Length: 99
Image 1 (cartoon, helix red, strand yellow):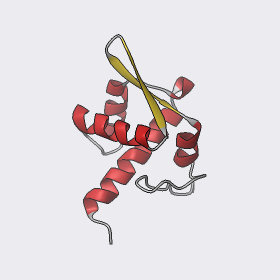
Image 2 (cartoon, rainbow, N blue to C red; image 1 turned 30 degrees about the vertical axis):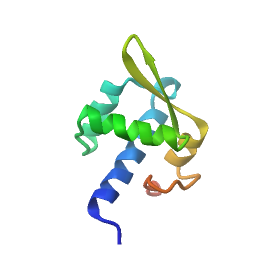
Image 3 (cartoon, rainbow, N blue to C red; image 1 turned 90 degrees about the vertical axis):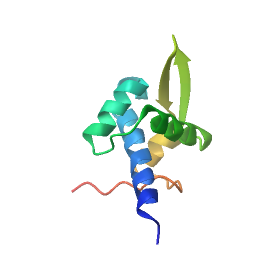
């Protein structure tokens, strides 16, 4: 059985992917993502969000660029597949089916 903290991290990563999947051009700045995460029950520090984004980038789900000192993650195709439940990625929660 997974520890609670692992379930939380997996859900938080899924929420990041879903936020990006609903954003224009599949990208958003880090501050907007942080506010949106708080709206879905994941109030996290900027450091934790950066750690999650680095993890997602290492696993080929997002690409993070820096423009004028602002980090902007972009969803890539594998990340969209994970956000929609079309592919499973260990370390990212699988979305629940729509009711």
